Length: 345
Image (cartoon, rainbow, N blue to C red; front, side, top):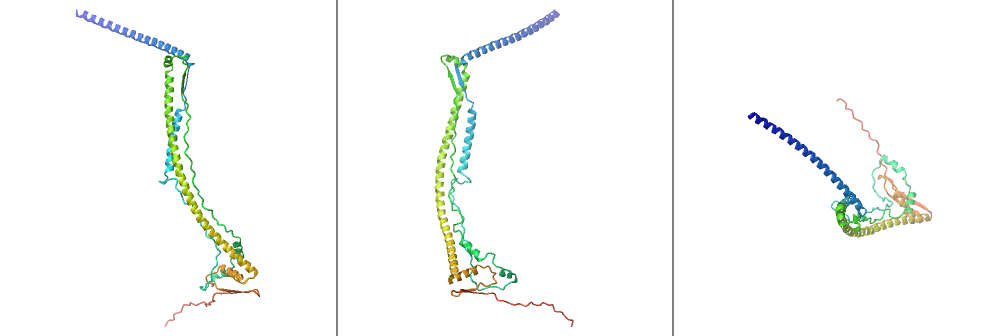
């Protein structure tokens, strides 16, 4: 009895396992078949959907531009450039940009012809000074005199000017961004068909236009800030130009006074030199003496030669008498420095 029971249980177990495997295989086959059938039905529905959509597509038109990303990138660049330019233009080394500066100009004194005055003192002459005494001046008086008479008495420097920096407005951004469109021929397509077949396209158009309005709003705000900045900056620039012009006028007045003094000194030297030369050529005593004194006063001599002279002119005889002081001649015999010889006592 127990052996039969065991055999029966084994047979039941084997039969159950075989039945379970069979049911499992049938279930997998049924699932695969269901998936295949479902896929076929889904593909058929999709084909039918696309076919119906293609029929309505002639009555539904939509357009979505592709410049939105580029416009957003350009907006970020313009904002960064405006902030950089405003920071650089407002403060440079913690100083405002539009600061008036005093114009500069060069002060050149008039190069008057030097005349050495008379002097009654001198020192003992050295042998090295002989050459400088015997050699004539490299530029004779006639050339110096001609240069004085031909001299241009205009001041040889440029007048100060108001070199104000130019003002350039920060350009305002321009934006050409087309609107996305979604158009439906309502006579050919019902609203429920539009919602069913073109919902994704209409949502894409609406999202693009929403983003487009946001970008346009940011552009308008940036343009408003730039307009305010340009207006304020122009007013600061106008004040800077006025202050710079006032400084330039002040410096120009000083320049003209200095240039006038320069020209007056130059013309005075030319006039006196011309008058002395003309009188000398006519044999007028005062002018003859004056010209000879100028010649003597222009000579370059070492300090061992006294600058003493006395000039006279006989107008009737046309004889010029010039007495010129010369250094004293001192004779110093060569000394002997001979060693003494000590004799033994």
